[in-house]
Image (cartoon, rainbow, N blue to C red; front, side):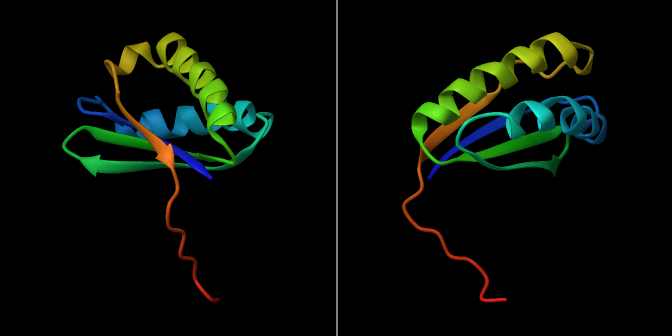
Length: 98
């Protein structure tokens, strides 16, 4: 598995960004090859974090480009700025037994 994390440090409204991302990015990701999951979290003080999980690096890279284009075109009014991006292969995966 491969994960891409995008951290935005000065989001005007993380809740609004999350709501709009859910409707706009959700369908795009569901149609992306290798897509596994997507999460958005509110880190407080204007910090928004998006986490995408894919089967492999190539799928993640292709989808990340589309997501960044969507963010720049559709969320520009939230003053997101350029994200800090961290990406890499999953080395450990522990899941609930439930």
